[in-house]
Image (cartoon, rainbow, N blue to C red):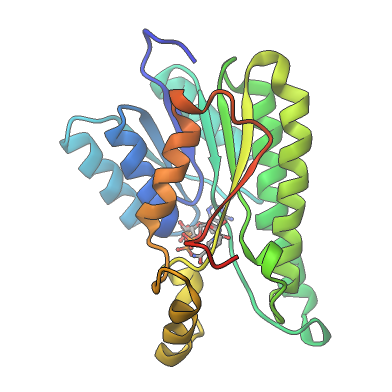
Length: 246
Ligand code: NAP
């Protein structure tokens, strides 16, 4: 990470939810940001425009992290527009529930392609193209520790992300690039609320020692620490940000 130059971050899956909060926070910390989306062009472009209006630098870029050319395209856009990449946040993800007996091949393949394939492609491109002293932050989930029924495939993709994080930290240490993961508990976003009744959501909120769900900003604050100058000695770690639920 250069001191003189504005740092540049790519945040995958930043059109809404946790990714959008990360983009807002990193931009307010002075970074130029690539706001990636796969389908939600309008909210991603609106978010980038708001950041620019406030004096920051942001560009919305469409790319499917599960495709071969998706993540390279994000790096191309960042290099062309902002001159390089210092921080990669592998945030894009999907969650589909089913007991293992009922998992469809399609649901298995979708989650592996986006949650695992997207992170592998992000890590590979980051390892090739991130500036020395950079940061890679990927998204696991506290379900890796909770072992809840019906979360099997999703939890498996997130456990794999944790394994990759530990290994990549050892591969990139010589270039002073740190590689960490954040593992949120339930956060009030579409990914979490979709398919749940208000009553189910209230029960899950009460299970938390702090008596509420996480908010996207709670998680963005942790990412900002890992992306920023104060976390240089934190490497190869998984930070569970969940209010104490596990
Ligand atoms: P969300 O509100 O559903 O947002 C998901 C984001 O990912 C959207 O911007 C979506 O963009 C993008 N996305 C989906 N597929 C993509 C693809 N193939 N390529 C690029 N972008 C793609 O989810 P969230 O709750 O913010 O979750 C963010 C991350 O946190 C995920 O990795 C999730 O597993 C993890 N997490 C969430 C929770 C929680 O309770 N919310 C808990 C633990 C971990 P489009 O709309 O354009 O497709």
